[in-house]
Image 1: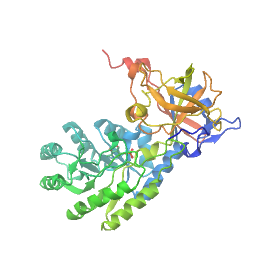
Image 2: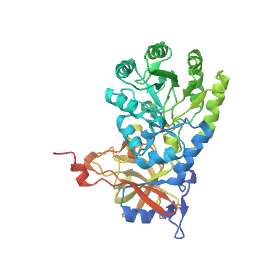
Image 3: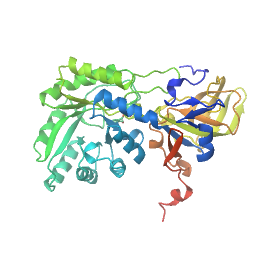
Image 4: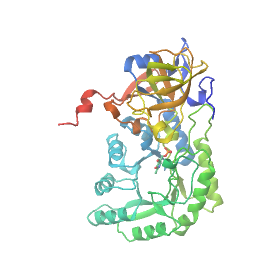
Length: 429
Ligand SMILES: Cc1ncc(COP(=O)(O)O)c(C=O)c1O
């Protein structure tokens, strides 16, 4: 796809994004130029109104069983926000579980995932009284049996994670519904039925439904229709009252992209359920992650170096890179960039936007479009970085992770502070 030279389009920006009287961009009533001055760069800025609105839309579309996929972005403030707005929280490790609990989210509003849960993680989930445990393997069933033998817990509601044999149109690394997968029990080999039988024999376990997740960054909703169709007879055969279709709804990252809304997604899923003969009283739920947080977040960087190679290309280097956004390197994902001082400027300059890491592969945007008056010292923004940016961030090159701000109504709160050199040294004796 040819990158667009026009200004950044409105649908890639958070809901409260606006121009200040000076023509710069503000979010939550605060100028991005001022936020960068005060808090430094790189900096993640989340629009709280946007986050809350996405959570509400998800609850309106799917009902109170819908869970926020916390792997997309998690900290205590995010966990309490999603909980306050009526979502359950999907956690996929002991660490995510601990953060959600530390935020005060009640255990029964949590869904515990993981393809290789340790005994300690299952025990912690049981101790927290999670609302749903999504069982992923026969080894896990063995661990669960052992733990329940020694537990006085009344009953544990379990979903069986199924691989429905559906291939979504997305990157191989985020495709999870196909047969050749590390996740879940195969429907076609009968493993999923065997898992239900094995779980039924464990005292204290109640198998309430099925769960599947076919992948992430999916634009074509027909994949979800195929998912529901594939699962319908399994759900009916076992008389389940619940089916979770997982997460995976795509979002637009580029000017040219458009994604279905959560409401459209829910309506497609519901119609697919009806067409497949699932009854209307079935609790049909989902676990959106990216669709809740991606567009609410934006990353601010400072331009430090511009290297022009005549006849080759121009490199623009910023003060972050693959450590705060590994998606371009891992998945070849595309992003846009713009200058918050002039968000409406056209972007005729073609440049490779790179980070500060000791690696040629440290590319944020391979062919970025930027205003041609771009200069060293400029503040540069990449929108739609709210999902799988901070949550996948690393300390590569011993670079500290950025601070994260939530902004709303003219106020900014630091929800994760910037990592310091002391933090980086803290683990070493
Ligand atoms: C089980 C499960 N649920 C939900 C999600 C969230 O997916 P997304 O952020 O694409 O909506 C994921 C992502 O990997 C997942 O594995």
